Length: 213
Image (cartoon, rainbow, N blue to C red; front, top):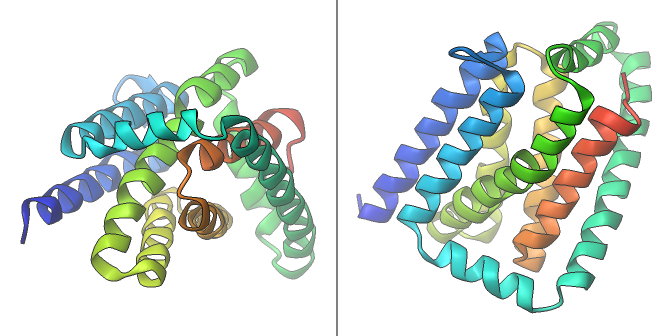
């Protein structure tokens, strides 16, 4: 295995080790879910940058080339995804008896923190940081090794699998949909700015402004 392959495998396992227990117990050591998630994202983004210097160069170039257009597309794609989840939530409640309770359980993650703290952490760390790691590092590496389509599918499947620690089927399904959606956007645009805005705005809509549960 090449050094690139080893670093990808290591960071993939580390992501599973950090996010799995965090989603299962909603804590990371003494930290509640939101501080724990933020710390996990900072660790993974920092190690990604140390392993792949091109990430920062790509991000800087992204900001210099059409940043306003990309941010606008990020906003529009977030609104579209919110609409998909609104319709999907209504449908799932009518088809799956357990869906309502599982969706409500996702919102129990909010109980331990203020709306202000959640909002700031989503905007400053969690939304952009997750995209930097999951799409900018993991998906890009998977696509480099497996090809564009297989790498996209594998990255989305792994993103969903990490959420399995929650034991919540609806959360895992949501992660799979999001992974496929943002992964497709990144594969098409190659813009971390676009997907970071999309992820951050969607998080804000779903968790804070217009909750679905």
